[in-house]
Amino acid sequence: QVQLAESGGGSVQAGGSLKLSCVFVYAYSINLNCMAWFRQAPGKEREGGAAVYVDGRTSYADSVKGRFTVSKDNAKNTLYLEINSLKPEDTAMYYCAADVSPPPGWPFYYASEFSYWGQGTQVTVSS
Image (tube, rainbow, N blue to C red; front, side, top):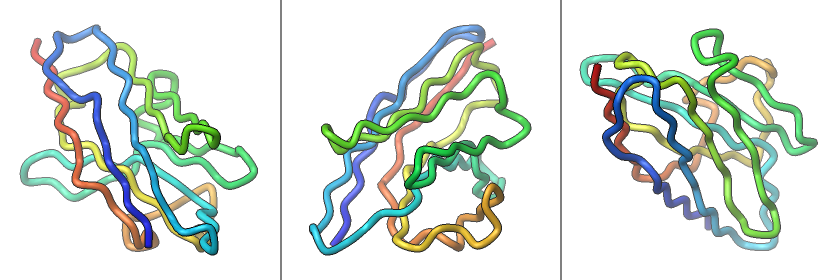
């Protein structure tokens, strides 16, 4: 019913920037009320990075505030994540996620609250 496909990852040096994209395809009967970017580093739990509510409100994890910018282009069915001032600790697989139900604790949200996931795109930052 919902398909998500991320792209834009790569290997960059610390201080660089990347813009990730997530193209989403879904049935017209579905309303995606919340979309988000999560990341997971090797050996660590999946953590939220940035999310956008259906009304355009955004939420960011404290660790990425000021460096991550999430946006959504409904005409292109694409979710974006712009990452600036990349740090080695940003190295992770980045996943796009979506759900029809808004997170009950917005602006807080958790991976378990999202039903639809992409395959991920790898971001590697070297020092």
